[in-house]
Image (cartoon, rainbow, N blue to C red; front, top):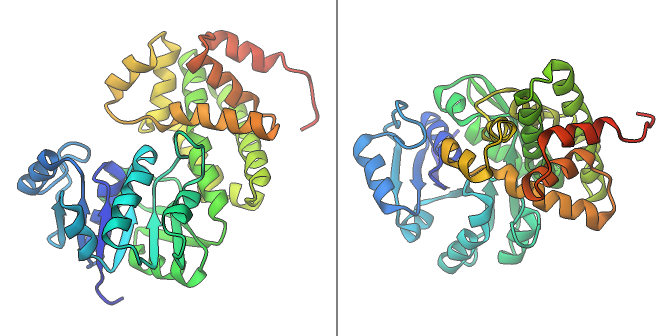
Length: 332
């Protein structure tokens, strides 16, 4: 397609991977990060030495810590900042470009204090926005940046906008599918991290493949129940942004959330684990958020409840597994 000018906001591993992908597709891409020192280091190294070392930037990828310049640069704006910085970044963008008509994001999670879905935050900051989309699916940043075959889902309020984003992103190794279920993608992307912590705990305790399979299957059921209650579609949970993302993050040690669970199983604190992982572990906050939502909406989510109690109420991982196994018997 015609060359586009695209700004990616968020220079973490996932934002960098998407920027590399888009630049490889021939687009003029600007990657923005708020930390000037790190951005300057990336500029001089020609790669993101902090999160994706050894993967060089394409010639059409540049970096900047100047948000006003970054926003002015783009025909298309893609947000990939952490969920806790999502609203603040949007507010800064709105001060620069208040009449923006389209925006997309690949951030996963809920807003920390309000527990709102990210499309609700977008609606509050940009009430007149005509086109919005979320990108989600089973993706490890390193594999995307290296060109490993990957598939994602793009959900938008306007299918033509989803198609446009698909054309920007797709190539021989990256395949986007299209959906209209923004809520489903957002819930799948937020809740799967809690299940990955649970899977890491179970594997760390030595419970084996049977336990992991049961956790993934019942975890998907819990997420689907929440998705349906919030207005999403259960069919979405059987796709890339539901089952696909859940399988990925529960079964591979590239997952920060799975590694958090493994660390917790050995008796390490959240703080000790985060020091070792060296990146934000979204599932820790998501456990608090999703547990609170489930309580508010009167939705039964036993795996989420046990992870929450392990992380925030001092429950031992062994006791959490016992609690799940001794629950009242039910039909599937």
